[in-house]
Every structure is written in structure tokens, then in C-alpha cells.
Image (cartoon, rainbow over all chains, first blue to last red; front, side, top):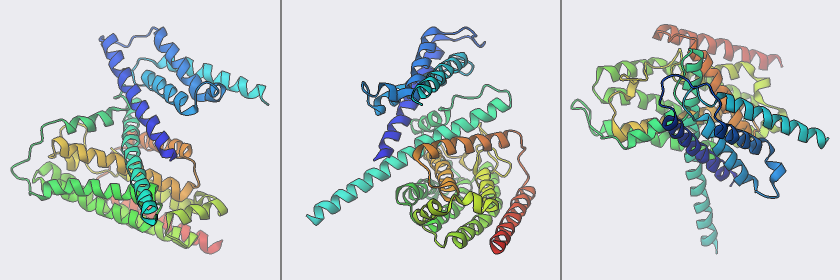
Length: 109
Length: 297
């Protein structure tokens, strides 16, 4: 039943978003948007997007169900942060993982 | 042996229903949250997190439930159960068993009645205002039935599985009956939150027909809302864009939600006569044009 996998992904996504929201409210209580890059969140974003687009590269270590679940947790953690936080981290993570995906596809062409 | 297989099939079906209902609720909640987020960004507000609708639904299950003195009991409680039951039925008929389109639209017709009765059963003037508009907005159902008729004339079936099979051979219906697709899209638009055709509903105290439902009753209403959004989008994608993979459904639902959010963010709510006339006009042009195209082709 493939729907069960999707249910797991959705649940993981929601849990990650809640964790991200709680984390960012605990870290940032100020009313103004904080514009510096948080390196921990940046690493989470890069790993998350890398796993989402390139889970095939590490399928010999992790089965896709686990790697996609981890990636969705990490991505939703960053996406779910307080409004205004995590934007730069998402953009950088997305760009790096897309570049890796393109390079990987070019190599295999 | 037969009994063993029979029970295994039943168990499998039950598991399928539970999984699909949970997906409909959870993913529907995320989509409605995304809808609010996109609307907020267009209106230059930060907006709530996209899981806000889900958190909001959960919150109500743990709040104290109180009943207004003016409520028409037990109807006031039963209507919530009926609303939830009809959308669970829609999930079973749609994503689980891919049954008849007529049942889905029967569900939709019932939804209108329940929406109306939910508002009026509380005895509150706020709920009543919204329920009166829900009756007006029943105008959206006429084009809906006309769309089913066109799909039937085109494919020769009302069965969703057979419509998918037809499209896998002849191509997606969006290309052969584009005007009917637009009419159906207007229906989706009318069901999306804060749309120009929507019932009167705010984010704060006056929440349309839900205004006087508190605690777990409100939680069930919100749960049903999430499922209804998911099912309506699923039906649209299945009728006009099938066959799609699960990722295709995922992307399609996100895109349609974002488009409706953009439209709703820049459009004021119509008054009832404008709302009905706009919907009916689009329906007449869409249905008439579709029939004409089918006759010519």
C-alpha cells in the first residue's frame, strides 16, 4: 500500500514543522525579523534538500522511505520556523541540492 | 479458506480507508494552511505557518465544549457528525474505491444542506447569516451536475475508475472539454476559503456556520473542511488530468491551492446576486460551449 508511505511522509512533515516552530520561538523572541544566517539551520536545509532530490545516490545506505522521511523532517523544520526566519537557508539548501542533482544527471547522460 | 481470504480483504479495505481518511485530513489541513500563507504573502503579511490549520483543528479537540441555550438539540450535535460522515464517504467513494461520480456529487449536495443546517441549528444570527448565503451559493451545484453530464457524454461512464481508463487511452479530458474544466474550477474556487463566491466567514470571532460550534464539535467541523478540500481537488485532478501518480496529485493539489489563494487574495467577496450571476454566467458559457464543441467535433 503506497499510500501508507505518503501518510508517513505527511506525518513526518507535520512533526518537523511543529519542531521548527517551537525551536524558532524558543530561540527568537524578538518581534523584528532576524536577518543573519543560522548555520545549524542551514546545514539542516542543505542535508534535507540534498536527500529529497538525490536520495537515489545513497540508496545503498538508506532505503528511500527512510531518506525521504529524514529529508522531509529537516525541510519542514526549516520551512516551519517563525515567519521571516529560514528563508536564506531554504534558498541556499535548494540551490545546492539542485546543482548536485543537475551534475549527477549530466554525469549519467 | 474463503472466510479467511474474505476477512483479509475486509481488513485490507479497512486499513486502506483509515490511511486515506488520515491522508485527506492531514494533507487537506496543510493545503488549507498553504492557502492562508499564500494569501497573506500576496497581501504583504507574514501569515501563519502552513501547519496552522492543522494545529487549529487539533486545538479544538482539547477545548471545553459548550452548547448555546438557543441550540436545536440534538440536531446541533448531529449535524457535525453528518458533515464528518459525508466527507469520509467521499474519501471512500473517491480515492479508496474509485466508485461513481454521482455519489461524490450526492455528497456535495448534502454538504450544502449540512452547511446550511449547521448555521441555523445554533439559533445565532451570525450562523444564520452564513447559512442563508450557503443556500444562495447552491447555484454552484447546477454547473456541477452539468459538468457531470458533459463528462458522461464524453466518456460514456460515471465510474471514476473507468473515466481514468478512458483518459489513459484518449488523453486527459482537460484538453477535450476545456470549458467544462473551467466550470469545475469555478466550483473549486467557490469552495476555497475567502473566495469571491464563498459564504461569509472570518478568521476571528464570526466564522460563518461554525461560529456557534465550540470545542470538539468545531474540531470535527475543521477536520471535515480539510477532507472536503482534499476530496474536491482529488476529484478535479482525477476527472480532468488523470492518470496521475501520487506525486502528480501532490503537485496538482499544491498548484491549484496556490492559484485559488492568489485569486482570493486579490478579489473582494461578491454580494449574493453578483456571486450567483457570475457563477451561472460562467456555467452557461462553459456548458453551452462544451456541448457545441462536442457537436462540431
